[in-house]
Image (cartoon, rainbow, N blue to C red):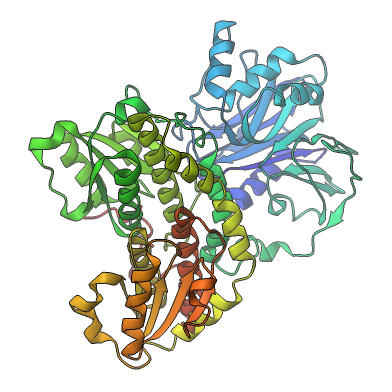
Length: 600
Ligand code: F6R
């Protein structure tokens, strides 16, 4: 996720863009840049780092320009990879939010025809394509170029020979016009220009817009009346995009972040591995995989390890990074997968080093491109969840699970051949996850009530089976870290081996009970604790199973067993959030915890 902003006809473009970028920084903050135009030259200022590191005093006075704050998905966060990007003749500057899926083939063709690239980004192809197609009208060029792009994009472009014009288009990435007395704006989020206007026009997929000082000219992809509408919130409410906490915002971002994670990865056989020498088929040659991770990332790895076994027929081990010791005897045939949101967790990096020293091949799965984990491992894969500000991992957990799930399916496809109906079915089911999460998050009233009820208790249990066990551990971790209730995640079958002794009248037990093969044994565990007085709440995706059971039940949308881990995770997050709210804790910054644990 990145933030983009363009303005036309303003008094001091560089300062206005800078101020807008600061407000957009929640969408990405590993690099930033802006381009303004003065006469017939475009001037750029870019930085690998935060917006405040931009030196806008180096820029000439200007009335229009574009800007970008980046959360890297292709290429590390360096100055060369920061937007805006320009083609060989520097006539154009562009800013992009999204992922150009077919960038590699476009780049090959452009390089063959003599273009020289200066960045590792997927975006730069667009600048060169605009250079090739430009015929005096940057808006028309953008309209033409967009037809060659596959993937998702919100794109802004300016041309040195067209003072005052910002061209814009979008596909599956937000873009909104802002109409102000001081000039007109276009951005990925209203917050970027809300200080100047409340009059907006939301662009739709395929729309193309020409934004100038006095006019906005939108060519709609499908005929419709284009009329400004008024936003009814004030700037002060917008720092968390209207949500009271980053955690709740990030919970609600999950349909979108999973959509991003799926882009370009749902056709079996096509899954980008970032590496100088390792390819997806190389990874498919390993018979053993060892996951190393901490905390939520460990839980994601635990859930994913079963998918590697089932779909890819790869033997797996999941190790807490702080406990990891490599097995030198098997190192050569082992793929070690470091799962880390931040890419900077000291225990995980240390384990990664040990794995490398033992001779194993390493892959990291991370949310932060350019982090140590991406530089240190032999290959890496981004989860594309966008910046996660709240200390408690939410969208990064579902992102990790999703990317590992996809990887298991791709590896399974390569290792076992294309005639595996289960792999195709599961890939199809994954495409529905964003819609299911959207529908779940549409109404969380019941989960809110459960969370607030839970707040009155000092301890609780979360039960699961199979992948649900990992989700139970994750839900319990969320509850304990933000509400400070002592929560324990358990494999349901383990109850009778000890924990049952802790169940007494009124003990809260959340049971993750998906339909399908696990239902019967989950149900008997639930009966077992209910018989000892527990208050059991079933979180399930099947209506029938609990109709006359007497258990309090929350239904999640979806019927495929493979989507339940995602909906169940989000239900657990929402319950934990409202338990914390009821207890009045500091949700985004729980006591004693830090976002990135860079000490061992
Ligand atoms: C819990 C949480 C932590 C992290 C853990 C690893 O909500 O966020 O448990 O998952 O500290 O961090 P990363 O994934 O950055 O290696």
